[in-house]
Length: 140
Image (cartoon, rainbow, N blue to C red; front, top):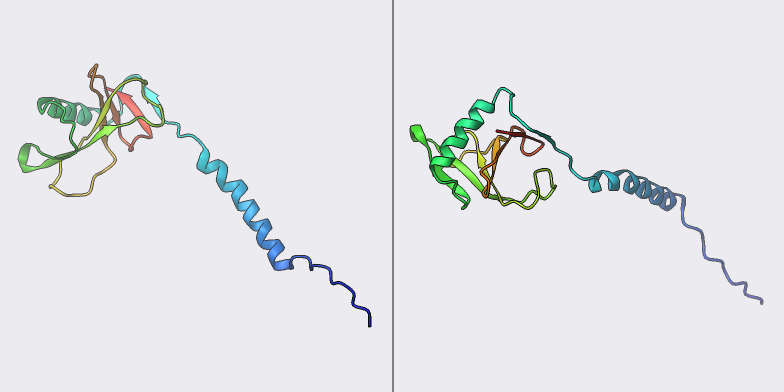
């Protein structure tokens, strides 16, 4: 009796389709995940909420721009939050500065934060307003 060695079988149709699907998903998702963020940065602030951002800037300035994140008492029995250091990881604002972020709108202590922030350069005092959680920056 002669024994013929068996060839390794080719991957099944289902496995082949799964590999193709994984490859396609990786090709589509990888560039999106790796794409750098690009915010729009404006040299002045003329949008509707700039006045609110300037009022918040004055309020935080009166508090000495605290650098520790947390809740701070605000006028009218409300509180406002500072998130502490803003690292400018995407490099949208001028490099080489130390920035801190502050919420624009006061609320009940512990309430959810909204997207409105000011970001202050601690060295120069230059302040940026972001109405959409760092998608755009407007210089105040």
